Each structure stands twice: as C-alpha cells, then as structure tokens.
Amino acid sequence: MAPIVGMAQGAMNAFTATATDATRQTRPGVVVKVAEMESIQRLIGSVSAQIDGARALMLTSLREGEALAASGETLSIEQRTRIRRDQSYAARTSAEAATALFAKSGARGADQSGAVQRFWRDASTAALHATIDWDMVAEMYGTQALGLTTLGVFLCTSSCAIVLPPVLL
Image: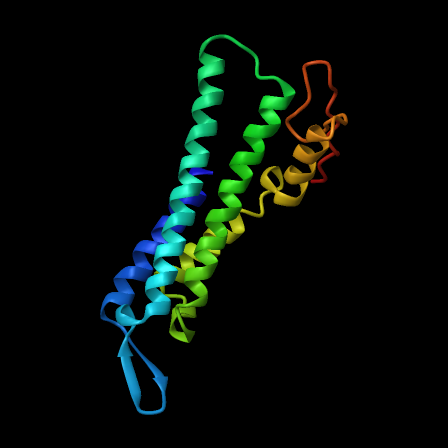
C-alpha cells in the first residue's frame, strides 16, 4: 500500500506545483490564477486529508501486525481480515485522491509528459491488484462481521490447501 499512498502524495505535490503558476479561463475573456480558485483550494484541502487518512490507516494497521508478529503471536483470521481491509481501503482512498487531482488537471494534464497523469495512472493501476480488490476485501470483512466463515486469498490457516492453476508456457 505504501507505494500507492506515495503515488497519491506525488500527484498532490505535482498538482500543487503546477497550480501555483497556472492560469485557467473560467469564462470567455476571464482568466484567473488556478491557485486563487476556491474550488482548487477545496480540492487540495480535501485530497490532502484523504492522503493523510490513508497513510495513517496504513501505518496503524501495519504497526499492529508487526507488533503481533514480533511478539511471536499469530494473527487471527479476524485480525488479518481487518488489517487487510484497512490496507485495501488505504489503497482505494489513495487512488481516488489521485483521480480527483487528475480530473482537475485539465486537458493539458492528460499529456504523457504530465506528472499528475503518471501518478494517477500508476496509483489507479496498482490499486487494481487482486489482493486489494476493494469489493472482494469489503465482502470478506462483512462476512466476518456477520459471523459467517471468512474465506479469501491469504486468509487460510496452515491447514488450508491452496490450489493454483497450471501455468501455460
């Protein structure tokens, strides 16, 4: 999750650097500094909170897992499911933050030389990884919260057998 959170922060840094000097035509004959637009200021405030929240959630769940592992304890299925939920949500939130910045970057922001589009593309792609698929992880956590048997990738105990499909060469 750390790279995805970092990508969102990179998008924020690139966006604010660009917005500082950029201008935008808001209506015919009216050009304003992007940094002075209230909508951009609100976007930066909102997205920075998303990124900080994702980072905090990621670190909190990581520290919990590390502390248990360092003490020699085995994480329960419930702990692993919650930590996985938190990590997946941090990835999702970070990708959404990068998307919000990209969406306000204008048509020029979609140019391949643009830093925001690169961070957005990388964060969005990384957040698609099967192990952090939000729908699957949220369902897994919901199943657990409802007292049902939780199954999912990386949740098996040592008695689980994982069957992998054959690789075709």
